[in-house]
Amino acid sequence: MLQVETWDYDNRRIHLSLDTVSAGVDFAAAYLEERAYREASGEDVRGKRPMMRGNGREPKGGGRFTPQFVTFLEGARPVPYNASHTLTLLTEPIADDGSVSGTGIIDRSTLSPGVEVNVEIGYQQVEIITVPIGSGLTAEQANQLALILPMAKQLGLVSGISALHSVTGIVVSDGDGSTIITDNNDGTYTVAPANQ
Image (cartoon, rainbow, N blue to C red; front, side):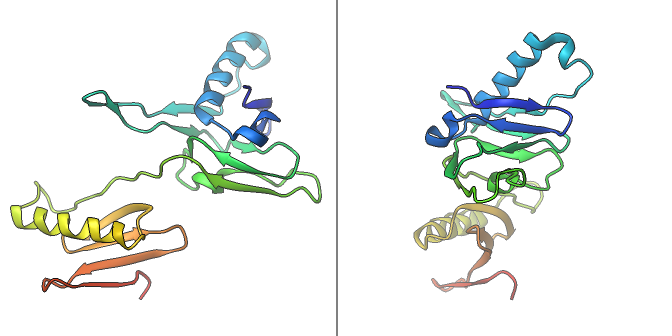
């Protein structure tokens, strides 16, 4: 299944194929398509910078790997097929400047009037927990963290944990905003919007 219909290097746009309307878009496959296209095109794309870089699939041991993601380079953006549909992203897309990722990277500005494309995430949303406390956790801190994280999952707030403010407070992003969960050290937790 082809992911890309046309490559517009001058405008840094990747126009997705009709196949993506029903099957979603796998940006890892699109990255491989770009590599093959550039190799086959030779002089046609010489001097033009690639629009994507594939990342991920780093070994974690035991036959496990990190998730794949694709970085869009130097302002490159994917454009959905020009028909109303819901586009499912099967691989996480990220801009190389960190300005956008996920559904925000899709450029709908050149679609015909009346064409509506909704974008949904079909990949696993995984983020890294950052622990800014130096050389590592104490046993007590590790125990506190072990209590907080399952509680956040039970509340249904976790789509990705973006930062650990302290061992007793975490920020949970649900896509519509952030929530701070604090361990009150008495067996209870406080849950509040992060902007308060």
